[in-house]
Structures are given as C-alpha cells and as structure tokens.
Amino acid sequence: MRNEELGDLEVWIDQDLCTGDGICAQYAPEVFELDIDGLAYVKSADDELLQEKGATTPVPVALLTEVRDSAKECPGDCIHVRRVTDRVEVYGPDAE
Image (cartoon, rainbow, N blue to C red; front, side, top):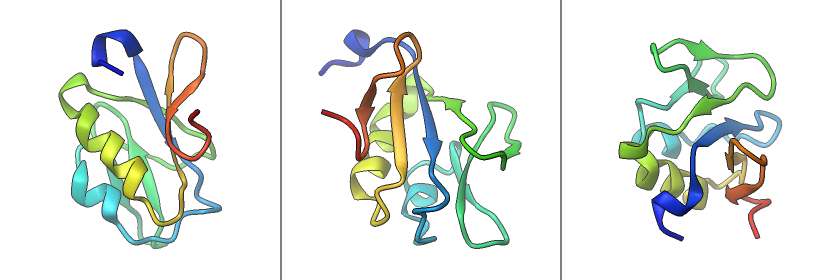
C-alpha cells in the first residue's frame, strides 16, 4: 500500500502487551519512548509522553516507514497503526 492511499494515520501502544524491548524507540524515537516503568509509550507532536491508556499520536509522513517497521518488529505485537478516518488498522497485530 502506498503512503498516499492510506491517508492520515495514528499510532497507539497496548502497554498490557508491551515487553519493554525498546525496538520502537530505536526505530522512531520521535514517536516512541520508554518510560521509567520500562514500557513504551507514544509521544505527542511536541515531545510529551502520552501515558493514558489507548493514547494515540499522529504518524508523521516522514516517519511512516520507521513506525511501520516498529509495528512489524515489535516482539509484544503491541503497536497499532490505523487510519484516522475509519480507525481501520493498517499495520500491527490486527491489520488484515
């Protein structure tokens, strides 16, 4: 699927499944960060850690490949990338 076919995307992490490996933060530190609890969280556009359950953040177009790879490589299968318009998961454990 090409980027322009996807539209605007958002990403969230299911901390209940997060293994704390930090692969996501290595791939896309602008989007993901490990907190002191050892789990990964998404960050807002102004670099604030979003710790509320199910918090989402927009996927910057320039970082789509890194975010996609994070979802694919995540050992906990806890990274979900979905279209904003219809909330259909395009990358992650629930993607078709």
